[in-house]
Amino acid sequence: RNHNEPPVIFHLFPIIGSTITYGMDPPRFLKENRAKFGDCFTFILLGKKTTVYVGTQGNEFILNGKIRDVCTEEIYTVLTTPVFGKDVVYDCPNSKLMEQKKFMKIALTTEAFRSYVPIISDEVSTYFKKSADFKGKSGTVNICPKMAQITIFTASHTLQGKEIRDKFDESLADLYHDLDMGFSPVNFMLHWAPLPWNNRRDHAQRTVAKIYMDTIKSRRERGAVEANSQDIMYHLMNSTYKNGVKVPDHEIAHMMIALLMAGQHSSSSTSSWIMVRLAARPDIMEELYQEQIKNLGADLPPLTHEDLSKLPLNQAIVKETLRLNAPIHSILRAVKQPMPVPGTKFAIPTSHVLLSAPGISATDPQYFPNPDLWDPHRWEKDAVNAPSLVKDESEEEKIDYGYGMVSKGAASPYLPFGAGRHRCIGEQFANVQLQTIVAMVVREFKFRNVDGSDTVIGTDYTSLFSRPLEPANIYWERRD
Ligand code: HEM
Ligand SMILES: N#Cc1ccc(COc2ccc(/C=C/c3ccc(C(F)(F)[C@](O)(Cn4cnnn4)c4ccc(F)cc4F)nc3)cc2)cc1
Image (tube, rainbow, N blue to C red; front, side):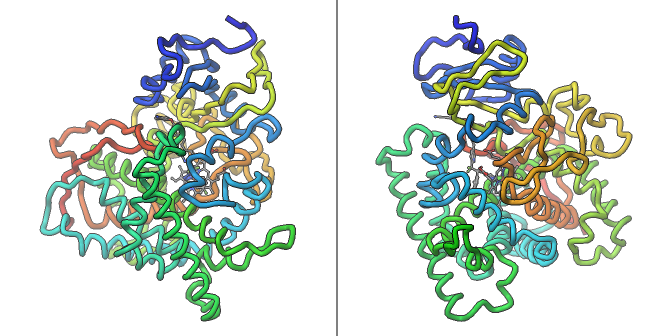
């Protein structure tokens, strides 16, 4: 064995390697091997030597990797470019992605969020009024498809604008589904294959992009009326790159698809997990209801953006769910030049891919006592299971990669939104969207598990974003 490289996990077959054992349950695979080899080790994923480096030092090493050492677009472009379209995100130099993130972030302001909360609340209440699955006083429902619907309506109406949202009631829904079929980890391997779903994906990408470009043209002809000023399309239509070039219409359309996919998958997965967790803990759901009565008034007035900061337990629900069920369980990087691992004699060669799994440190008892317990109260001051050594982001030193200030360090045990130059820009939007959905669901329903137990369903790791295994049936009862 080459002692300048991390230990390689035993495997019988060359290409398959450990893909199946990893792919079935990544956190379990990583934890078992961490116990044997420590924080840094190599396994074969789809024929590629994949070096894992977990723990806070691993998070720092990979997520704060210098641009000359690690590359993101090389790995992800095969997956994202056929779905999003060309010239955006991972189909362009990193410097251009940094500018695109700046443009996207411009629209995600507190003022915009103020207008989003009533939109999201109305979409949630209307959905439950209209849905055939929530007729009568009580019943059982597979919650995941319902949360996917609620997420697509709320995300498209706020981020994409009313005219796009209304298209999701007919044509766009099916096209979105075809686009979505191409968004699968198996396409890391088979993106090029002329498989039926890849052809449907390509047709859907062209058709959806055209819908956006037609919308852009009609908005330009009508002149940007006040109503659209809050959505992202308006801001992208008025953005110019540093080199003086206005953002071309096809890039606006492709960024809109990227944002739709980002927002949709992460939020529908997270909101599904939240509902599954609440059904297992009806006592917490009751506490959420009491928190609203106590802090907003027994008449439960229409929710506003300001109200969200008056509901600490409601906020903690999202934070704790992302600690245990983050939608992105593995972050990949290509190695561009040999990377010495500080404190070891290892140098990671350019033939390897790096894999970061921040969820491993987020479930490490060293930082989170009783780590596998879903305990939203742990985020309160002086709580019994309070996190230790987890710095609040507001105290950390910041750095700007071109799209706003982000924490300079990535040596944190809790990074559901990533860190460094590729850090998420949707965190604030996601929190507004998820906290509003939870607050509205708590007002209308009581949940519990169908069998009345406190068990939680397993995780489906086969798609790109980890989500509850289906069907995830829960029992609901309308509050009188
Ligand atoms: C619960 C919700 C979300 C979670 C947990 C999440 C998580 C993440 C993570 C872990 C990354 C880093 C990926 C990497 O380093 O390879 C990321 C990046 C990103 N996310 Fe999110 N995200 C969420 C919602 C959103 C939303 C709503 C949007 C858009 C409105 C969004 C847009 C992006 C973008 C543009 C990037 C940058 C990718 C890059 O720079 O390479 N995300 N997100
Ligand atoms: N055979 C087999 C086989 C192989 C492997 C496996 C399991 O192995 C793995 C390994 C790694 C991964 C990685 C997940 C991954 C990466 C990138 C993206 C993304 F780029 F798409 C995203 O970050 C998504 N995002 C960001 N914020 N919200 N969403 C994004 C960025 C910007 C943007 F504008 C739009 C975006 F939406 N999405 C998800 C998943 C599974 C199982 C079976």
